Image (cartoon, rainbow, N blue to C red):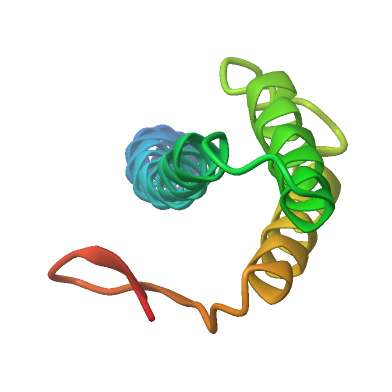
Length: 121
């Protein structure tokens, strides 16, 4: 009897602790992902505005790449944590970001630390 009661109490306590830990883990990693994607979007929008003034062929390729990156970010499913291709789409966005940086001759390094998120150039 005591074994059964102890098991039930432990199961209930473990479930409660697991839910709280899962919630904290999800919030932390969701915030990191949001910070990363927000940084990419801000970068892309800023460069898009800067390159709009020049209309030569080299800049039109860069603008198309930036448009593609912006479109990928805007289609990213922020509200659906159960989306099965979340990591795959995030990797595609990271790849497009690296491609854009290469086209702009910018060496980027996105870091997520305890203090802040940053892009270094």
